[in-house]
Length: 327
Ligand SMILES: [Zn+2]
Image 1: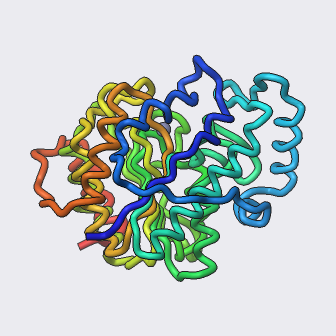
Image 2: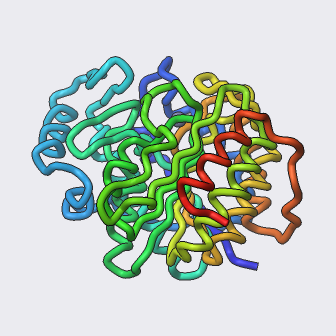
Image 3: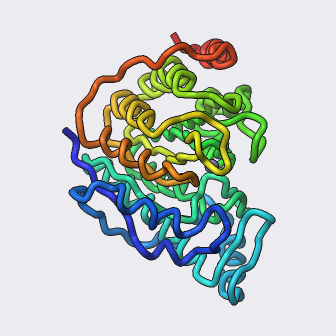
């Protein structure tokens, strides 16, 4: 059984706006759901050189200055706030994602509970609660040590920033399942990569109301065979639990125990320890979902089927199978 670590740190409360869905109580409410016997992992903030592999240096200095000039709250767009401490907090989030990824290379699963989230952050722009793209920074850094990184993004929103970072490379397999016709309105199934990256971006948009039968169908028929074919050295999960049935932002029908199944499927497919990095997740049952993810990371268990997928999910899977030449 693979050992497991967790990154959980009060530094991430430094970026906070009570009343906004992405606020510091998201993490404080999770703390009691993380099994007490999981050892913590120490981490350092990301270096400027680490984040500059993903972001425009002039964007980063602009962001740092905007935060320094902020007394209480500033808004970068109607969704995305900063505080005086947000830049430093975001560097810690990216550093935690790096540490979790490097820990997975050392043979242990690691879940990094970071804020602010990252997968919407673009090369030169904050977006959708995200300032620095934590997972992209971690993937770029670990690519200096290994050949191939797979990223699975199960957040209810499409990870536009992550997709764009790796759209032209065959060294990163980006797999996203997300709610269709929803912010950020990218991630159509025909977005599959460009140049040598053609075929290394897999998008599975699903209709609102999709449940574990639909997600299991996408995972078992598309993501698992694609990951097995790619044979990654590292697998990073953009772990957004806003696919839960009671989420404030999403409209999916995933239940907390379903995360055990999804996590087990990725553990098996990857054949390497997982690095999980928190993205979204805003509902009352988020903590219970986290508990089930740790159950999958710390015990052996069966992967069983999950019922009949919807006609829409079946159609999407048929399309993706043909598009990506999967068995
Ligand atoms: Zn999300």
